[in-house]
Length: 131
Image (cartoon, rainbow, N blue to C red; front, side):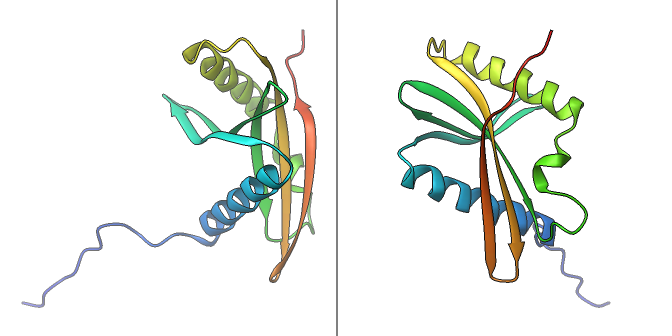
């Protein structure tokens, strides 16, 4: 009987590689622009935050969106109403969990890859609660 090998984990998909690379580029951008990274890939239950950073006594919850092409849309256009509600809920959970009292905002970093090159757009206060 042949010996069948079962991998302990599956290889990353192109989408996962693009996402991880985008988050690394986003962190580098933030650090170079005076932000302190508090946490990355923070999770609580089903809630997740890509990057939590701080600058000028303000907490920045940063959603990173990366695409390998902007042919159909810019990455930040993929943040629909449901994702916005989830981001707000996750941000509130983070703030409550750590009993933070600073101002907080939700920003987006949008990255488009074109071969080995990329463009990055930082959008402060991109998501905010509405009445």
